[in-house]
Length: 384
Image 1 (spheres, helix red, strand yellow):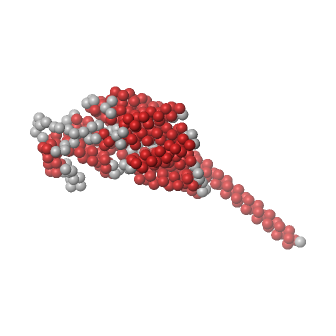
Image 2 (tube, rainbow, N blue to C red):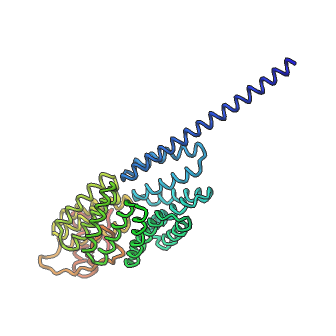
Image 3 (cartoon, rainbow, N blue to C red):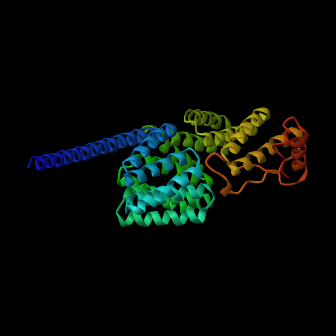
């Protein structure tokens, strides 16, 4: 009998031990989940202040905890956030890889809301990688999901993103129509942050259509909102847009002041992609003012950054503009020049109409200077 009591006691003790262990594991798991949520919120706070590198550090810590407790939904949401942060830093391949990983998880756990958000993000990344057809397809898939679940906030964001794709394809009227739809939704859900971003995009579309007064009005409205919500990245982009509009109006001193403000912000945020764009824009303004040495120095800095971040379009534009400077230095005083505009689709908010020497004595002078002048460098071949 005593043995029976002993065994029963052992079974009870063992059962209690298992229950306590499971309880402790649950508590630890619960604490880890709470910590992951807190870390994610910290990442969001830094993201909203355009501090993307700090945001990434918090998201990565949160991701590790979600994986530790096998919270697939939390893991997927955090991967989406990481993809957005890398996109903002112009690291598009990394952004795409993270978004694709997130998308697989969202579909696995049937998270339609975040599936739609991630598809929209992937559309933007595809656009930056010049995969325009895929960008449109992904954005339209995202829109269908947002509408299916009545998610007006992300429907507005995706409409704005789709407008940006069409703007890149030089279909500005179509882009404007999408931006207007997006604005209505941003306002309906009181989404000031994305309202500001869409105003910036609208301003750029009108600038590309040479409607400069409208572009300035929209950009200034956007700037007010960006400052209100402390969106430093968009503030810098919008200052650059205003600078490019004033450059188009030949108000170069005013453009320079705006570009300098934008450059300060992009450097503060360690955003190398936009820093390179802004340096190139500054170089253009100094070239227009015939300050060629300053223009060369700025273009050289821009070229270094474009190559660092694999911005081939920016690199090509900068090389062309360097040719303009070399030609200006090489041609005899009073030689007439015949500028040719780069097609609109090759421009962004920091790219006023560029003058490219396509043929004749200007091109030959530019190439001669480039190949034998003081800036000659075998690592940067001159292009015919």
